[in-house]
Length: 294
Length: 327
Image (cartoon, rainbow over all chains, first blue to last red):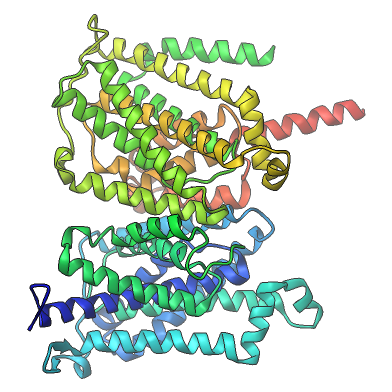
């Protein structure tokens, strides 16, 4: 069976690839949105921390001989601890200033992290094995689906939806949303807002670390892997706006799928299609799809 | 008075420099100085943080290189082509980016610049990863042969002074005052009846064109153009130069550019020197870790010296003057 002259299995596998990329976009833009909501900081180092997550997985699995599943838990925790230290020691001093200083500081952290990993691992890529449980592929009849890719989509979507649930439907989430609206008032009610801010940053970057571990078995792990991704994710954030959690998730996934389709029909355009969509959205709906400007 | 003496001294140093230093390196310093000043016109005087200035700098360089090599245009026309291209890209990019404010503006410029990067990577005339090589310097106005480094140096100096003078003129013009008003308080500027978007866009295009002038001139000087100049890290570098020197000061960006470029070039020597004096082997690797060092400078500047070198000096002078008045 063919669709517009493209065999169905080829189309479906590109679509799955798009979905995989889309889940990374969703997880990263979700983290950016959560952080921006409470801290008013655009975390440029998000891409670098995704890279750190992938390298931690690589170090854990190859050098220390740990298990992939263990690293899926440990690596985000290490990234979170790093994030908390950064927030406590540096970001904290910038909240009262213009947003741009937060961006510049995290940009500096990005360069520093990339430099450090470059001096240890060089620029050539590393990779880790797909865990035994998820090796191989399943034949669905209309396409052959690599198990690991399916796992990436399922795992990221579960994490995204869990985050959405916690923020939108629980008591803790209501504190968080209230803190986004008016931190002073929330503090007056006796809630420890600075602690909440610190933990939110830790959680946001842990999402990036988690995405990094998920990506490690299927992409080339290099110190620069995060930089291109973060620029695309910025475009995703511009398209979706950072006001809505579900909006971030849907925009991320949607753009991944659009990118996948572009790879089928016009491969040369796939690396810029997200930016083109951004331009179109800016022309038609300047505030972004789910936008409420802050 | 003091300012006049300062500028005269700087001019004398600039005129004498090629007899003391290596002219090509000096020309590189000048071009990056102009680049940082162009960027500063936007961040320092309009309050817009662009993270896409590499697009203007690099694209201008590529088009100048193409015009000089393939089209065989004379040097001055080649540079003009680069400037026009940069201004046009600036017009489109600015027109799109000013639809959003603050941090979104920055993200949009970064994303659009990444598009330009891919354009330059894939376009046939740029030769992808190899870049343009062997770009001839040619003759200025068909008369002055630019092959000699000293002649080239004075031409570059003249271009950079002209660019700098234009920026000073813009900043002190009524137009520049409106830009400052937008930077200080955009809603107020709007309620005073200024068409803020048009002012922002004009500033953006001017800044892009001047960044293009710097990029084109640099390409003529060095005779090659590569993807480094359109890469996002170049956009970051020009932010750093301006931050180190002092955002919103006239000479700060030039000083910042000199420091960062000198540091980039001499980091290896500095590392070897530190390794020799301290006996720590690790310092010898410093030359390869430019990114790490620039990252550190970024962090230190944002946390401790937000006003930059010139800004801090200015603040110190102002503080001592206040003390004197009180005493």
